[in-house]
Length: 155
Image (cartoon, rainbow, N blue to C red):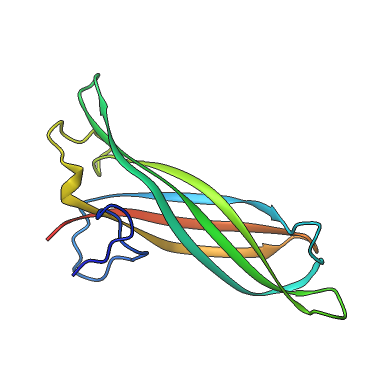
């Protein structure tokens, strides 16, 4: 049985398994820089990262010319970074950052979905295909993430 976290259409983070049918998908790169807040001590090194993904909107958009539909997926990627601080008292600290994202899903060839496309027949899954964090300096971290947002027909 599928597990849902929003309105029966969105599952928890899940990457496709061999044999899974991927009906529609898009890949979304997220990259940028985050700064450890000034109320936290600077870091010596990152020693653990974690993430959560929250889909906040999953709707179809009808386009008039050419006629068809697109799927809009909106959410946030929450990064958690545990780090060794440059301090004598408390060595381990945690910082979190919310990275908003949005993506459009169309047919694999880039064309619009048909007008009779019924989003209620699908579950949206999100998979982190790639994730890397790099220290730039004692307060700055760069991130590179690739999300696979994919739809699977409900069974």
